[in-house]
Image 1: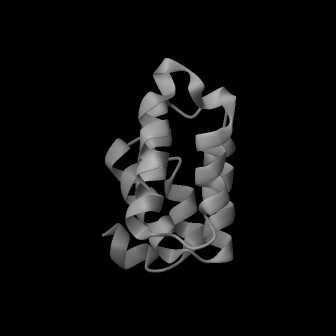
Image 2: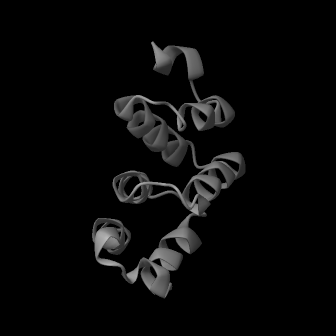
Image 3: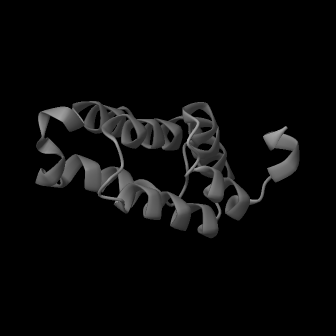
Length: 101
């Protein structure tokens, strides 16, 4: 239903990134990464900039970027590989997802 409703609207999918349902968040992460427009990159940037983003959600966003080969998202991936803030053990899955890309 969400696929039909939101189509290729990056703003609509960006709103779904805040869903309380994990499956909806994962779908939204994937769709925004697939859309890859400047608005989509801004949405991914905003999501990854959140200090309260769980390590699991962070890894899911980076995996979505990698699977979609999102153009324009390289700086987001690089930040997760180079920034010492992501060296923490609990962020290991996010770092691995960034390295996979």
